Amino acid sequence: MVMETLPSHSVPSFILSCSMLAVYNLSKMKPSLASDLETGILRLALHGIFSMETQTTEPHSVALYRSSFDTLDMMLKGLLSEAPTISHLLFILEHINFWIRSQDPQERFRAINCSISLLRHVNQQSNFEKSGELPGLGHQVAQFAVCITDSVEEVSYQARDAINCLYQLLLNHMGFSTTEPIELWCQETEDKKMLAYLDACRVGEIFKNIFTEDQKRAFLQTSLLAMYDPLMRISQAGILLVYSLLGKTAELMRESAEDVEKEIYMQLHKLRILREVPEALQNFLPN
Image (cartoon, rainbow, N blue to C red; front, side):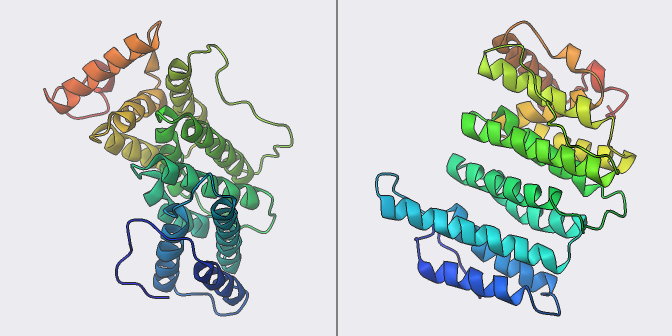
């Protein structure tokens, strides 16, 4: 499956589904696919599904997308079964992350939804290799957490679900059983924007207790990059995540979402325009 240039939007086609089914069947054979070939397959398949044009008023179009998504899901699980390790999972998720950063909210939603399905599958398996500290898990938590402050409500809630899955994965990785449902998120306000700010802060507060030092470092690196993103929804999340892991969120939180947004904007202005390091970060960032 080779394509030198990809269109901006994918056209629904049974050919793509048949191709993904062929890859799924090949995944049952040895040896495993080479990583560069797997990258090419992932790039083509993810583009085909996440950018697929669908008409919500046409049942055939919706049914074709759902069928194609299910086939993609099956293919990804088949590829993962070739090497059932957390590092291979992170390899696949990193390809999906490209679409989580899309400016199209539908593509962001589809990408996170795909990640959730894959993570739930992994959490139900007992044969996954759990060796190593895997700093990439810290990076992946931050990738999802950046979407908590997304202006599209469905994307924001999907990001929370994805983080729930990663939290369970980390606990399983550490050897802890998680049979009871875990409530990670705030229930303190009905203001959805304020709730998004509070929940973004919760991420660092929760994960800093179970992250290794390398995972903390990867989480902070990803969050710092987000702070300097030109899109405000991303930079807002980035600074909240950095402050939360450092235990400094009290310096950003205010009584209302509007006041929190003003405080965030002021701190970002200091960092990005004035080149000043906020007091809360002076022991962490060089002047």
